[in-house]
Image (tube, rainbow, N blue to C red; front, top):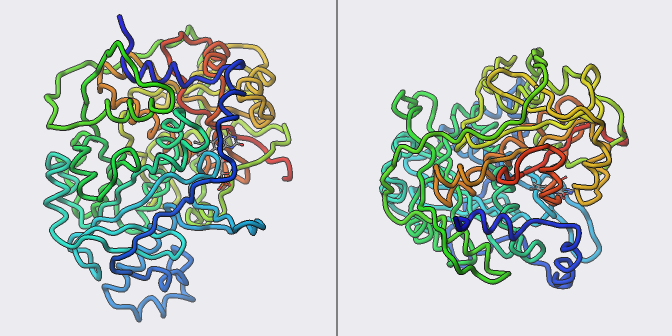
Length: 507
Ligand SMILES: Cc1cc2nc3c(=O)[nH]c(=O)nc-3n(C[C@H](O)[C@H](O)[C@H](O)COP(=O)(O)O)c2cc1C
């Protein structure tokens, strides 16, 4: 049978030891794209004035100031914080040519393809309409005023989370920002990056009495019209409805986060350089899809050794989630020293499982798009109390089962394109999906869902690592087939993302 577009895309964007050099030579290093969007007109809404409330917890010293604010001003302060912790500027690197603004969420190559929009309807202090988040100035630009709830409802087939929300965040990808460097493979990284931003929004939302419901199934044309997006320049990828906790209903919790698109098995394919468009276009939804009962994908799992339970005390946040996000940086080098089994257990627990935490505001598990499609493997290089080797992680049972029994550090380093981060990390998390089955379930759009989910999980793992004083870095560049060999999984299982965790070299 011919491959689907997603399978073709994945195969043709694999990194191989032979092919990598030719891709690097195509990069126009002198003309990097700017990671910002500018509007010539539009109404500015300053959010920076609310940033002195740096602590999310409104403790005594700022309590007085906080109490002096009107209801609308408090709502605007919440919005200011929500966006800042989602992907605001958290550090400035003073490079000679131009300063480089680091952001709350990591991004492959620091290219920041994800744009954030806000849809407000009845939000205190903000006229109903659509806004772009201008990250440099920490302000909103209002570019459309009107009944946005109705239009979002039309675009998302009346998803109940939208009806319940006066605030919706929309994440888009600006493709050239990433394809400039990564060509067709950029689509993978754009989706992973967007998943990281979403992870921040979802983690921080409960601090403002909200819960984040992702919506990945929407009419792509309607979203482009709504946001005035130019085809093949920028595209809507994810909506995050943010209902207040009081507005939550059982119906809303049951509502699906995703819808299927068609699966296509074309015999002719786009040439190199246009394959990211081919897959993006093929994964569009144009009309309400007839949801057919495709059974959940049961992914191939290798024969496993005995189970290692991972019980661990929950993370102690002590109100530090906001600070942890602000201080997060991708670790540039690991020392190779061990982490404890408890630390690994805590990171996995925080990333995947509903939280039994010291802070009720983060007592939530992640709402993912299609978690049944992802498998998690943990390659252990140096974790006290766990034999080195490769394990499958089952988040429901909260246990690891060993699938390979040898030390793998050098293999991992090699498959991470020789990056030492892979070999010296204490543990390396691999997310994989059975791609043909994922496409069978959700059409070509499954490709978007698994990558954004993996990015979201990567962000939760990173933030948990930072809180424990450890390091983390995503790895978007890897030799795909070598990853399968190392994990001992069949070729139809696609490696989606790698997250390294360990002791930073300078700790
Ligand atoms: C999807 C993704 C892939 C990444 N891949 C790599 C990688 O292969 N190697 C690496 O050293 N860093 C990688 N990073 C980390 C970025 O280089 C880093 O996020 C960026 O430089 C911004 O720095 P910060 O995370 O400290 O804010 C990746 C990050 C993301 C989100």
